View 1: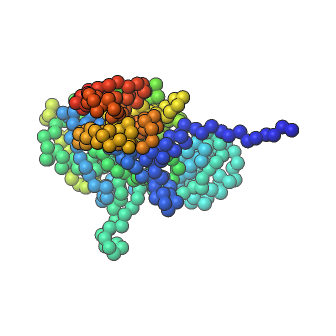
View 2 (view 1 turned 45 degrees about the vertical axis):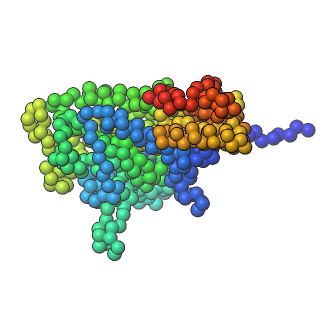
View 3 (view 1 turned 90 degrees about the horizontal axis):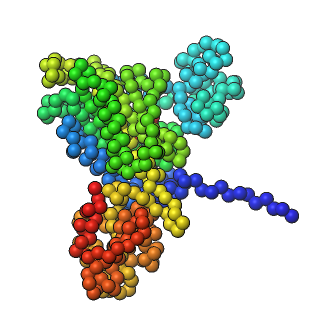
Length: 470
Ligand code: ATP
């Protein structure tokens, strides 16, 4: 008799990465012991290091090493007027619907109007209630997702991505603010403070890394889309009369790619630029392109680059009645500068880095992280944990390296298992103290990617690591 056993689907790459991240302490589901909280995540001992290394590299590359950039750290809780001026309060309050299959989110009125039009009718769906939208969708079984053609709709919801915060102890007393929905507005709001307190001259940029909050309802792929996330954003201010915006835009594209490929070590074949269509682009933007990365769930936005004209500063001038103009040093005219904005999610960068580094080989799983990003740069092992002379020697090496590098210690199990464990954590080098060490002060250094070993002097370990880090 033939028995049809259910075929077990091999675990997908994404599921394996998520499992590794939890098992090894990169990423945990948020509020885990209480059953989790949708679209929130916490970062474990390895994750916090990786995230910090990415942020430090971003800052070094876009602020420290440039002479036309200054940094900023604006507050997360911010005045409601900021978000009224930016358009977020009104603009994010639409009735939205999500396709559960492809995760596309769209305005329900647009979806329905487009559908009517295809059916040969011109009808407005503006101002309907979510219940009325749902009824139309139920009544029209041919109304499928324009993106993937499936019919797996969520319910329609009135939806504002901003998180309001009630200020003051008594309701109404302190007024209300918002958790910022993007870091960019903090830059525009502080534009005058920065030009009054520093020696910047056009063209120049203001950069910031910090948390942003969006009440996202689409379930994400791990940390790809979360309600709390970190952004690395900068506004590059210029006078369009004296700086050609198209050249500037192209230069920023090059700088972004150089960072992602050169500094984060991402394979270029997994990246592509995608220009926004006229419909997709915000009305004030002259040009927007996204750098997309090939995640296991498809090419998705990693980094947005937008020419936002002088829209934001003009809005804040109108709302605050403050002068946010600046002198162009070339023309000596006071102008409202235009901006080009490169904006990236640091957590999304981290997910990309993990995906790109993940390799399965015959006998091991290895994260081939760029060593600059690795949570631990080096691990130190005594060959045997029950030989005090080996342990003492290894401890002294560990203690000497620790002030300079994130250094791991492991004396459990056999050496082979310890190597495999460090491979999964992305540690580029493992130092083992063995019996020969006691005779000639040399150790073995094992390279993560090639899995080969060489013998070097203890006194040379620091230099060895330094020479390999960029
Ligand atoms: P998306 O279309 O993915 O929602 P967006 O176009 O709204 O993103 P921007 O406002 O341009 O995003 O934000 C800039 C960057 O911030 C994005 O390219 C992305 O890397 C990151 N980002 C945006 N929203 C989230 C989120 N909810 N979780 C994690 N990262 C995010």
